[in-house]
Length: 360
Image (cartoon, rainbow, N blue to C red):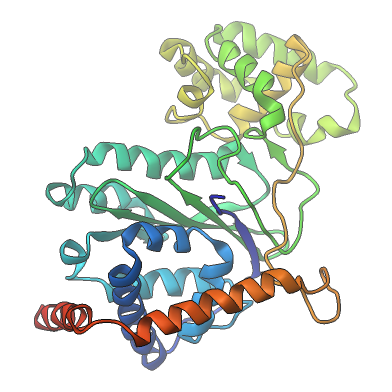
């Protein structure tokens, strides 16, 4: 099963001390060298896309297990740790926090000559994963951190984080390119989180396929028609559950965006949500109209699940899963045994890469 997901963490201020971050960077470098050497870059992407493994990795590096800073700091340590070794490893890191996230396409394209595929495909994957988690899944968290991991053969994974200004929590989103059949229908399989939110507009839910088709159809309609219908909606007394959709919608302000969707004539929902300028309010308006005009219900299900790997000793949030615990022990045992019997050629290869990185 392809494991990707979401994890919630409380926001903590400040930065990791320089002495700690330098050690995190060095340790991350060595761990990644071993993982790539033993299992390959594809397995590394799998592990990064697993919120359980990522959280554990952050703890190994020395960061607070429950802090939101684990995401930005661990991603930063990985990016700096492999700097200069990307082409040798066949593993690359783009993006970061705040303004650095906006440079993700530039970062990807800078490694274009080292890739065996068109880097534009990776740029598209990066952009769509961010667009979906900011606009397609409206859970109250606004993205401020986006890191895109990719390999020479075009494999990729995403670790990105959003902030909820109301409760001061951060939510981390994990993606894995391998096996992804759609950016807009259940792109997060196996999602974990510390808590579920009540007011969520989930436009990428499996049960919302009809609403997605209707939204794409509406996106091809004239802006005059759409704004007229929205004004009718605002004159009606809607049921309470529509508050999440109807509040803050201003037909006049949406006119320019509706004009853009009309001119683009999006063929499907992915093309619609991928249009520049189409944001959360545009999608809320189209989702509302999809249900009221076409009868296609939208989903308000938060796809998040718990982020705990084995459960808690006190039964919270659920009792310890003994079988999962035993499987984890066995996997770690096998990893240690493989490391102990590793041949000299592999060890020398790791040392060679280390020397190359030191020179740079």
